[in-house]
Image (cartoon, rainbow, N blue to C red):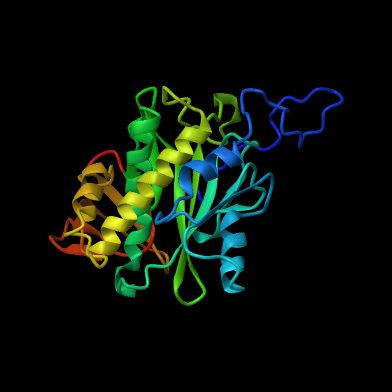
Length: 297
C-alpha cells in the first residue's frame, strides 16, 4: 500500500505499557472486526471475508502470497492495525503509528473483463475511496494520477494516502489502500503529508470509514465489471476525470530510463493513461511514471 510515510513509535505509552498494546492510544481504538464482518459480508455481495491483524509487514504481500497458494477467494479483505513494511509504487517504504489510518488490501478476480482493461482498477479504487470518504468523513479527496489521494490542509494540497495494485496468480489483482486518518501534525514525516483529521474531517472513526470505502468500491467494481471493463460506458472515465487534480495542471512526468516530459495534463485516455500536451504541440500519453505537479504552465 502507498501513502506518505508516517512516523513510527510516536504514540505515548505509560511506563508499564508495551508499545504494542492495543489500548496504548485511546484516541485510536481498535477496529471492531465482528461489526465489520456483519456489515460487509453478505449473501450475493462482493466481500467474502474480512480479516484484521494487529501487525504485519504488508497486507499486499500477505494477500498476494495467500492468493498464490489458493488460500484466498475473490472479495477477501485483509486489514492491518499496523504495517511495518508497507510498500508503495517503485518499492518505496513507509510506516505509520498503529491505528492511525486504514491499511488494507482486497483480492479481485475480474475474469470476465479483458486484461487490457485491468489497468483501470487503481483508478477505479481512487474514485471509490474518494466517494466513500466524501459520504462518511465529509472530506473532499482529490486524485493525483495515477494513485495518490490528496486532501487540503490549511489551503495546501497534501498527500493523505495512495493505492497499489499487484497481480495475484494468473487471474487476480490485489489492490492495497493506505490512508492517513488521525495522523497528527507532529507525526507527519514531511510537510507535504496530510491526514483526514488535519483536513477537518467530521468523522475519523475508522469503522464507518472503512465500511463506506468498501461499499463504494463494491459499487464501482460491479458497475465497471458489468460494462465489461469499459471505462466510458461504466461512467468511470468521466468520474475519474472530474475528481482528478492532475488534469488542467502543468506537470513533469518522470519516466523510466531517466527521461522526463513537461506539459499540461489534458486528459485520461481510454487506457487510463495521462495525456500531456507539450510545448512542441504534441499530445503524448504517459502510462507509467512519477507525476510532479508544477506551479504554472
